[in-house]
Image 1 (cartoon, helix red, strand yellow):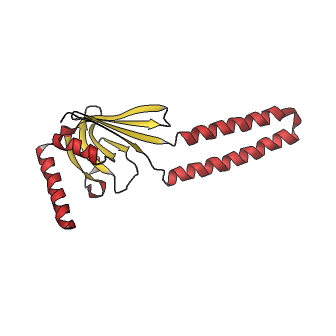
Image 2: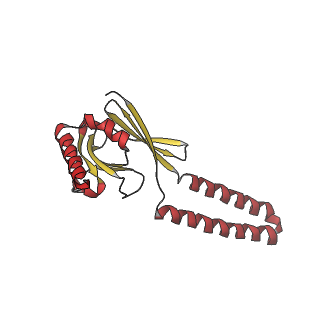
Length: 184
């Protein structure tokens, strides 16, 4: 199967995102009060007060916009590219690897590994620790032994499946069969 599968995943904001938004709103309100004070009581610096407020609005907008992060997974003939897209403006290649170089794959909740053996952790998933988060341990040319956390959908997984190493393919099929028997 020499297909092309693309998937875009939007990172969901967690507690950190909510704290950043709250701090920005409070900071902007404080900046509005300061610029109002400068505008009303220090008449010689009226333009400065308005300029400070406008600058604060711009900085707030910029910080809030970079909180929007998408991850794009591209699968092409056994190769996976994972890109990080920030605010639909900036794209950064996070990982490139061949599926047949994956040593282990599964649900994040099932991961049992000594992190000292991992040289790099790449987080490219919807949530930090949700049920949809999968892990892949792969040897990449750039980083060496790498732990990749991502959220592939069923189409992406089915495209990857024929390219897994034999023992990993068998392990995943065995897990699927045990899940099916538990459901019945």
